Length: 110
Image 1 (spheres, rainbow, N blue to C red):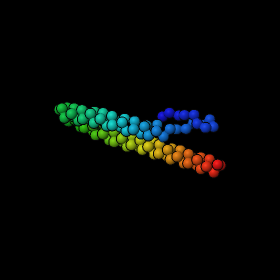
Image 2: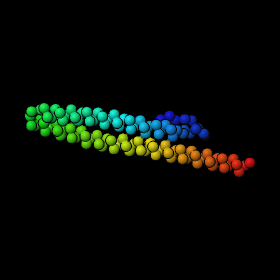
Image 3: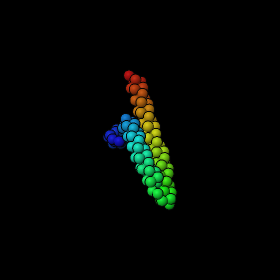
Image 4: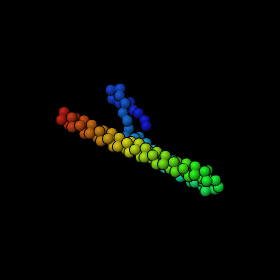
């Protein structure tokens, strides 16, 4: 996210950067989903080939735990992406409102 120098020495956030960040978060979520699926699949395969009930049970539990962990992480990714998307829309709306108000002030002066 890029910050730009704004009026009065403050900083402003670019709505487009926030929206782009949302897409980047969702892309990362997709990569994590692929990785979680591959890893838990391998653990499940190892469990099937273990030949020892205690080890099989431990690997099955690890596989299930891994998917549960990913599900929680996936919900967090969704939450962050949604927050970035909503923030981008709010910044965009605020910018439009300020522009309209400035135009109205300028029109009233002429």
